[in-house]
Every structure is written in structure tokens, then in C-alpha cells.
Image 1 (tube, one colour):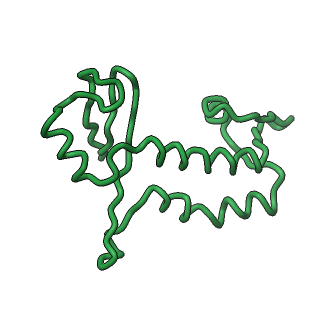
Image 2 (image 1 turned 90 degrees about the vertical axis):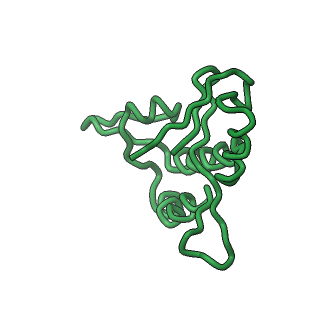
Length: 127
């Protein structure tokens, strides 16, 4: 599930789930970064560039180079910095840290977006 405003395009796709007594059910937006940390360190230490699809690189606004064989490479430092920025944006854009916070807000304000105030907030279920 994620939250999306069709008016201002604000989106939140994560909630914090944290319990010191139930580490199995814990999740934070940092988990993705921690899970990928080894790969990101490997990129920085062992590669000058990483392979990437040109469409994704262009969409994400990364500087990329198309090689003679048609493959696309993105500078490793830029790629790692971009991945860190994605996590920071995800965290700084979070309005509802826990799912319960969202449900309390929704009970009072229904589909009113917490960012633009318009009636465009949708709950999108993901399979």
C-alpha cells in the first residue's frame, strides 16, 4: 500500500514498523539502504561506473555514457549518491511515520491531501 495525491503528486510508500521486542516485524525506510549497503560500497570501491538502462538513467536524471557496444554506464559515485538521495527524500517526505498515524489522519480528513489540502488523496494497493 502507498499513499498518492492525484492533485499535487505527493506520495508516501513506507511506514515505520518498529518494536524492540519484535525484530522480525520491524521495517524502516533505512532497511532498503542497509540491505543494499554492501553493493553500494562495492560500487564505490571497485568500479568507476555501473551498468544501467538508458531509460532509467535518463528518467532519474543521471549522467550516463553509451559505449560502442550499446551498453550504458553511470559513474559509480553519482549512482551511489543518487541512491542515498532517494532514501533521504523518502524519509524527509514522510508525513505519517506509522500506519496508525495515517489511519488517525484519514478518519478526520478522509481524502484530503496533507500537503496541498485538496481532495485527491488515494490509497493504492500493491499486490
